[in-house]
Image (cartoon, rainbow, N blue to C red):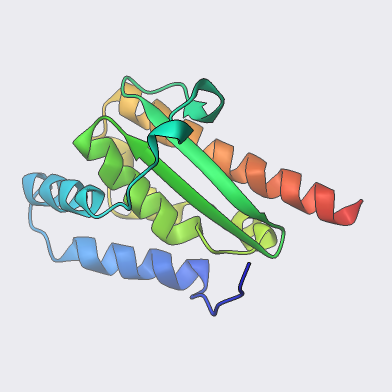
Length: 147
């Protein structure tokens, strides 16, 4: 995998918070999230299998990871427009990052932009499941690199 320069996770999260500060109400924020989701790259149908499926959300979500402790790349998709937008935000923060950086940075942007209080319980659970899965991939890659 070719290495590339990446922005620090803290900088990416700050950019997201700044972008969301331009919106006055949550309807505009939701529309922005949906628009972000429309820009996700295609997710191959052959990857939409049970082993890549995340549970905990009312929507279907599939997530794959590639790489190693030096750089993890994530791809994901959902059958829900709003969840695709949440995926786009999460991948923007964590995809392409070293595993140690992923583990060192909590998803602070979720609370900072007010997502935590504006998602339904099932969407919140799904987001938490996605974030936990990404952290688990990072943990597994660090463990594999150490052995």
